[in-house]
Amino acid sequence: MESKSPVNLTGTAKAAKYAPPLGLVDIGESKHAYIFRVSLPGVCKPQCNVKLDIRNDGRVEIEGVIQESEFINKHSNNKYKPKLQQLPPSGNFNIIFNLPGRVDPRLTVPSFRNTGILEVVIMKHITPNNSGTPVPPIPI
Image (cartoon, rainbow, N blue to C red; front, side, top):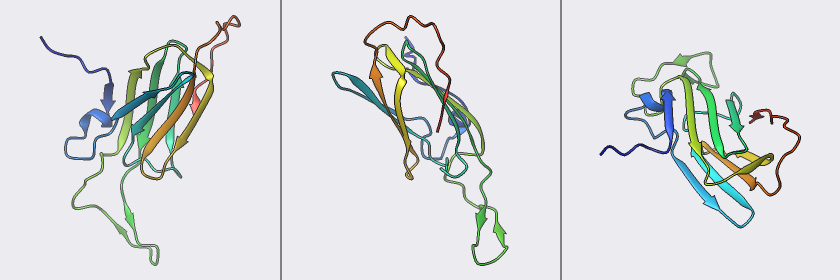
């Protein structure tokens, strides 16, 4: 019997064979909130094209783009192409996973660390949302 991974990777996240893993997920839980960390090596804060979408049922979708890799010498106009690439290749990626329970997407605190780790704290769902208003994706 084949076991299915709880994390779905597409695009660059799936294509990275020799690079540091893109899309590794750690999930923690307290009485009132969840915290999750996702590895995004090769994604830099200044050009961070990442969209985080969290639904009430706990489904998390992270979409983004890893930019073309160029080495730039800050003291000249020289640009260098890598001979050896250890980071994930450039392109779109999509990471989907589920938190253990329902959440309130309005009460989310995302932070993107310089180490390529996206860390998000999100409060657990306490009362039903009677408004029916969808919560827009969170820009990072």
